[in-house]
Length: 403
Image (cartoon, rainbow, N blue to C red; front, side, top):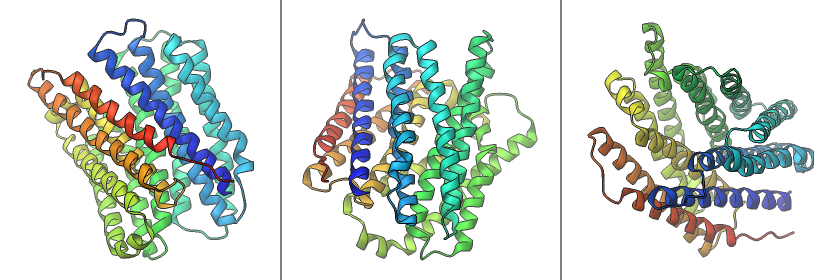
């Protein structure tokens, strides 16, 4: 299994490098002239490939590893077609979106990626049921693949409105946020929680682990309305949203308590670079959960969703600060990434780039609230993108596969 795992991890890291490369191009076009590139179309390719080619591909690989470790067999051959199909659709979107935006080919590839996620969900659910050892980890993973499929309703809603030429901004944004919410707060987050639970569940009380899952599972649906507070919603829905935000914070507090109790054991078995990446990811998640609770205040919600720089900063906090750093940290923790001075240096540079990027984005967002323009902010964000790209280039070129 080690050879197949190393190969897939290397592919995932290369995909992340491609995401960073496109990020540099996008930032360069904002700061300087690049007339032969359509910014909006390239942005669509960037975001779709980041979701499918980097995060989804990596999580699928890591979830397959969990099954393989439990069943004691090389199961990568069984999932080879699905993993390759997901990779194929990701590169299809990477090529077609920058060329035509939302067109026949790009929509075809994005639709195929959804069907691949359905196939993965069905196969993975069945394999989880064959594991004799039953624990909360399986429920995190089952919820993750179901929420991934559920998110596709938002994508199909967007496609329907485009085909029928229904121009209604609130409906369009509601469908878009539906897809995004159940991707990063559903599929991405629940898969990551399942992975971390698989490392701490042995010495943790099952009742506490179950409580954490119940809190997040109960909150995930009403938490969607945190993204739609700019729309008129009934009072009872608003109260549910507040309860969901509080439930997620309580669930995270319980999880942090479990991790703290096992800190000594985890420190002995975990590389230093993995520990720091997971700490940064945990801090970012804590910030995100507090921001969610703060957004339930109507005046703050109107400000947040009214300024694009704040929305972009929030999405980067989730996708880079929480999800990407966690995935890299977990890969280092299970030693699926080659650990040496160069890989540690490259990862460190990448992490610093994320922090710098987030600081600049949030500074730009806060300034936008007061209608203040920060000089050279676009050039500064370009530098942050180049730092992230440089770190990943060092990390990726340092990986080797040993058969």
